[in-house]
Image 1 (cartoon, rainbow, N blue to C red):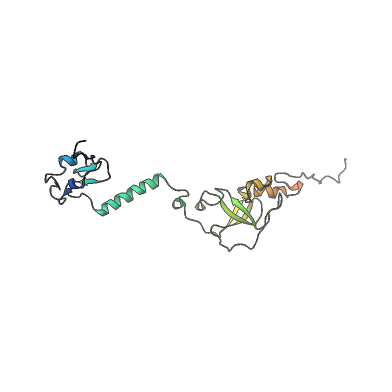
Image 2 (image 1 turned 90 degrees about the vertical axis):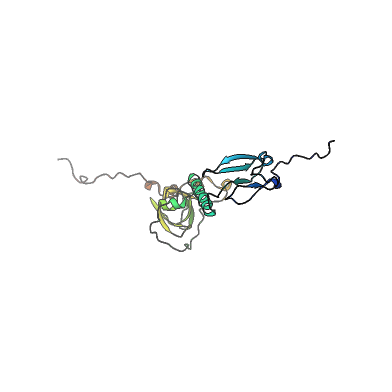
Length: 226
């Protein structure tokens, strides 16, 4: 085995790093020649900065060097990073993008109503029933997501609900409200009904929506043929 044999370093040896200021020509620490020296050149790849200055990147490492005066300040770096981050966030917005929503119109605010009711069967909708408001049923300022709300005044075609998010009161179409219950495996089929379907279910047979009872005119009931 030959004497003096050593493993070739993977990264640029520290003794061949540059020395000097950025305003003057750099010198190799070991070779006393303009940097990069012949040894350093084996571990570097050359590039060019946007300002026109030569840059050197370590081929197998994260280090890089900007030869010549620095073309940017720390503030410039922060501003550029902030601009890049803004572009990325605009291209990949998080849901829901609350800053895209219009201003919220005025709505009455109340404390949590002192009701609590869990439906026990089809049509059993009373004040205190918790429901989910479907996306789009509220003003766009409240977002296009499901909102948890309590029914405070059942009715058709609209119910009054109290929104748990901010305590505001809204009139929402009953067909845009769905029940909130336990785990899906424990729910009977009527848990998937809308509040409108429940309210229609408990109506008397002759009062279903869309049905009309014909009334026979009695104006001529007392007349006989002449």
